[in-house]
Image (cartoon, rainbow, N blue to C red):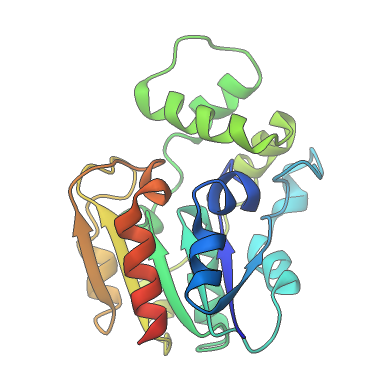
Length: 224
């Protein structure tokens, strides 16, 4: 059976994102074997509270992925890490479905300091984007101190148009028009001119993985 890895976003986990939103079941129904992994510092397993221990999230992820993947599906931070691995070893992870990513790929995580303050209970009044990400993180059962450390890590991955030009994998970029985190995505699309692109109305950033249109498009792309 063809293996497909699923990589969640910051604050999530395989169980709280992909299993809870029905992706694992849908992939099995389409004849794929889902491979679930957690980004370092995420999930019930916990991790380090030291930001420097998250200085190379992509290498940690690479060590968890099996060889010979048919493809991989990422959301938000998960897409950044898949693109980093694609830049390092083009084509190694098969077909790539990248959701919840746009021109924010090239910039620091803007909401990071506000989210860290909230995780440490230093603030209680949160703007909508921060509140949504905190709610997403709470569902994963992750240690807030681990999640704060991930946000405070030395900047990584750091991707540029030049590095992305090495990409060889078939790629689908799937986004929501109402995603305040990942929109616009023009610069990313220009950096990956070979990639397919789909843009839907609704559902914003954190709800993207629960939208059936994303799952359906991903399976269709992986089946091509």
